[in-house]
Image (cartoon, rainbow, N blue to C red):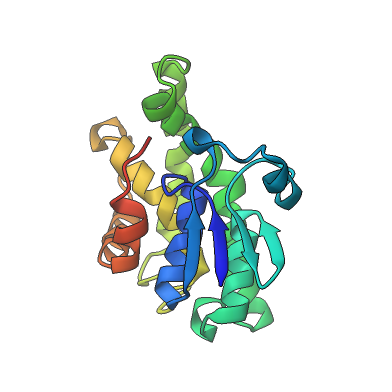
Length: 209
């Protein structure tokens, strides 16, 4: 059986658990990271020398890096729709997954740590600056979603899973009054995500700590 090490309040772990729920994949989850420790234990460092979560083990195969884990599990266990095999379609899904990590995540990390994890160490000005930085990034996704249900059109894909966990943090931690503009398409997309039981179970019902 698939084994997942990681804490349920980790954005990156949530992505993996959410995918497993969407595709009906059985797994065993063991808490690790942050308040649970364990990531620097010798056995865990042997699996993941970065001392972070998530880490998985599947039939003796060990893997880390959340978006790579998503790709692996979808390739092995999921239907074609969630991670299409066509070269161009797959590249398009992966583009949005990588964009989540390289472009959207940095300012949202500042917002999260400034308002949840360590508000005593990150100034309100730094959080405000991160919000200003994130707004035009969300506008890129808003433009992409114009006239379509999901990022890839009519198909729910790994792009939703990569970006959806961060969307919950954005809409929870940032008040509309703090924003210079609106992202109507992203808001509609987010409402569709919230209607998915797997998203509710593994993302929106988990306290942010």
